[in-house]
Length: 177
Image (cartoon, rainbow, N blue to C red; front, side):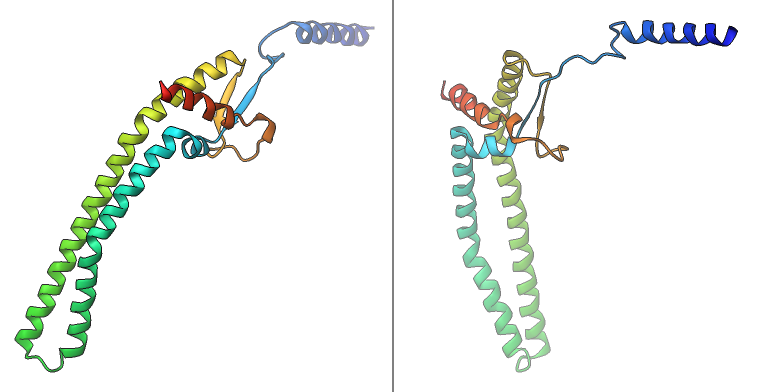
């Protein structure tokens, strides 16, 4: 009888505990969306314009260094071909000149990479700031609990929850103002 009373009491306790609407027992309905930030940046009007500026600057810098690179290649070939005919002193002078020009070109290349990185940051910063606000508003207006970047940590997501295309449209509209 005591065992039966214990089982009935335990059953009643479980029913009471699990029927209460507590946060730990019942989960709220969630609406999750994923977006591909890279896709939004590449396909939006403002993202394409920023990429165009970046590509143009990169082409400028590459053409600027092309002559110097060709000069270095020519110097290296000359050293390889004529070094056996040169005196030791002449050979050392040519090798030092080559190494100096190579270091100078490397420094210029590093400066150019830094310049390109700054340009990219400058061009993308206002777009990313606008996108952050747009995603927040879109999420609130459309009842999303969570919106995640599909390329940072999401291993799988159904295509039906990808809102990238809608965000591209909203970003284009916001950046056109």
